[in-house]
Image (tube, rainbow, N blue to C red):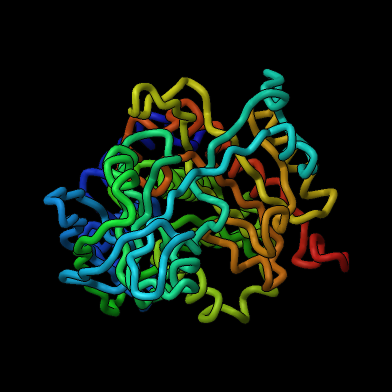
Amino acid sequence: MDHVPSAAEMLGWIETVVSQGIRRPGYPADAWTERWLADRLAAFGLDVELEPVEVTRWQPGAGVLRLDDGTELPGLPLPFTAPAAGLRARLARLADARPGDIAVDELAFTEVPQSFIRTLATSAYDPEGVFDTLVQTIPFGPRMMEVVEPALEAGAAGFVGALTGVPWETRDYYVPYDAVERPIPGLWLSAGDARRLLPRLPCHGELVAESARDTVTTHNVVATLPGASPHWVVVASHHDGPWASAVEDASGLALVLAAARHWARVPAAQRPHNLMFLLTSGHMAHAAGTRAFIERHRPLLDDVVLQVHLEHAALRCESVDGVLRPTSDPEVRWWFTTPEPRLEKLVATTLEAERLRRSFVLPPDVFSPMPPTDGAFFHPEGVPLVHFLSAPMYLFDSADTLDKVDVEGLEPLARAAVRIVAGTAGWSPATLRGVG
């Protein structure tokens, strides 16, 4: 493992990317990151290509709710909802909304006891024994992306999301990010501003939610190294994010770079397979880059031994007086792993060897038909996978800053990725597909 970069070097990569600014698909900072990644990988000695990906770019403008009593409440336009220069209507709680109203709905993040997740897991590495009592706040409400749909069903002309159940004061919640166009305007309000609004309902006012959408060309960064077998292992993450986003996913791209540099310094005969390092575009537009890669490289998929995805080296945070404070502990680590005993054992022993505490090994479809990762679309293609992901509550928020990165975890996470890839030596694509 001598070739794995230090945590300081990986953090330097993260800082470099974060310093470019907001990295949404099609934004200048993300285009810069594509080129920077290609340059880094080429400097390591890999063959690199930039593959075009069409994405929907969404750019918010002004967002404000003006009540007829003169109160003005600033907000963030909901991603991919319709623009409104000024929608005047009655405002009412969703349960009381009539067709043509602006429906107001409160959002609370979901609290998940880890004792429950343990019942779903193949295995866990929890040397502290915290999973008996630990409760994780995940960055979604019960409807996940479908926050606007109940307002649409009610015939509402607009939507206001009140972030009263979010543990810190923010309006910067970049959800939904599925690139589905919703035909009404929407606005997120912080908990404090929402509490000013709610007692006034029903009332009348004007919703301003300016935004622009277009289609632009972005790029997947694809880099390869020859190995000792004719088969492939793909190691991936995504390079875009909702904000400047240190954890989501500057940390993931740093882990992929770390694995790529390690294997570039290992002789080809000692690499277990041909290796591909993939950094996708458009995660914040319904994983557009992953879907485009699969379509472009579909003939390759049958020859992939394993696909590894690396996302979110994150610290657990606590809310103190409405402000997020990082703890010294990692956020719960999920390792979505194809349910094949050899692979599950490889992952479990790797987690213990690298002391990656607070880890669960989970089936890919434990929460939904696909894992909740940027690489989800590999799963229905039948590609064996190990997807690392953590889901801190600030994941889609501008509060995802450098102080939230699990710096202590960077090296062991990178070493874990290397161990898992090395552990596939001698395996063929049939090994993990139930036919070998």
